[in-house]
Length: 52
Image (cartoon, rainbow, N blue to C red; front, side, top):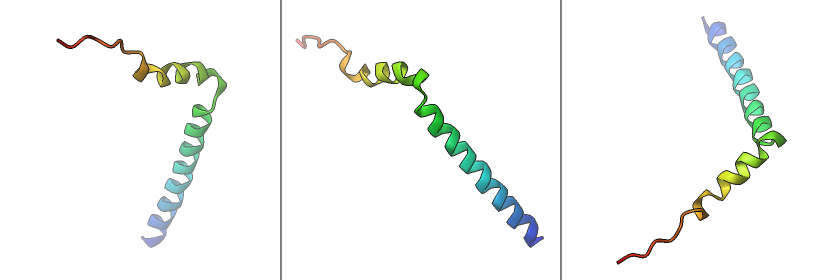
């Protein structure tokens, strides 16, 4: 039974690492650069409104 948990732990470590690498690759992909640049400007896009 211990080897089952050891194997499951190893498998989840590998799956987690591959998922992490996929997220990093997605975040640095050039096709996402424009969308991320636009999202980075969202906090500054609100118009200032006069408060009465």
